[in-house]
Length: 219
Image (cartoon, rainbow, N blue to C red; front, side, top):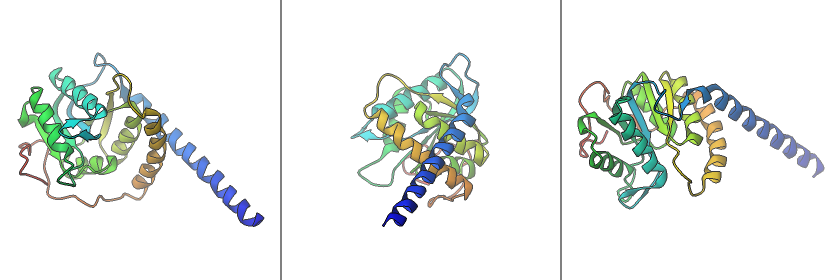
């Protein structure tokens, strides 16, 4: 039993070192690409807003702050188009309809809104942005805890990425999501390493062509 305990202990130590090392690498290689103020924020053609939960037909606070930040950047002409990416995998849970309606109700031109109906995780969103929407450069809009991973994935997949922090006030469970994010960064590191292909791809929706805003056009 002592032998197996030592093996388990060594594996646990190796795993912990790997988690700490990957997190340090991802954060240190991307922190310079995160912006907190619109004053020095570079212009980009496309802004990507990531889904973050809904409450019925309303966005969660996480998602509302992301949407508000994206709308503000669009109105300030720091981005020209918005790609909304989220989970629409179940009839009873439709992040994208909530997100697109929120943007519409807050004055965003729907011809400038594109919809990714299969953004089930950050890696899938960025992979599809590259291969389905043909995006080469983008502003990523999310809370600070999430931006390091999103920027890392984007840059590794060939999308020159800058992040805009949507943090505004306090968030329920923020310490927990920060802890969970440390594990997600490790998973994304290996997703990039093995060039994981998402389950759902579909036909090309070029970001430089007509918007697919219509709810009937799920691709």
